Amino acid sequence: MTPFGARVRLIRQDQGLSLQDFARRLGVSSAYVSALEHGRRGRPTFALVQAVIHALGVIWDDADELVRLADLSDPRAVIDTAGLEPAATYLANRLARDIRVLDAQTIARLTDLLETATLEKSSMPKSSMQTSSTPRLSPFAATKKHENG
Image (cartoon, rainbow, N blue to C red; front, side):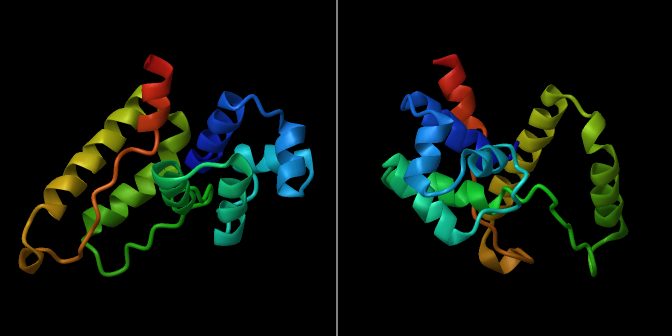
């Protein structure tokens, strides 16, 4: 499941929408919605994300979150390390090779570490940064909050 698919499913279920009813609203088959929620459709297009936002009736922050999560929901992500340090290539390859054996807790710790590093880097003056990055919350923050409260 992708971050986008997980969030769509959570919102759909919170609204009491069945897979079939949601598919009807979107004008697609329920098999398509299931594949979208489970990450078997690739990264959703901007048009599809907008259709999902409309079909779910979400606005403001929830809509922005779905757009952001869609961008982070390519189930076959490619990491281009050309021109980076050898350690970056090593890390990318290790992650690609070993992601399937990591448990949820380890993935959460790695995600938190990446988020912290990104936030620290983004708080530096632009002149001291090689690339600019926008701080992001973990795509699972809303899910965790929902599960706990």
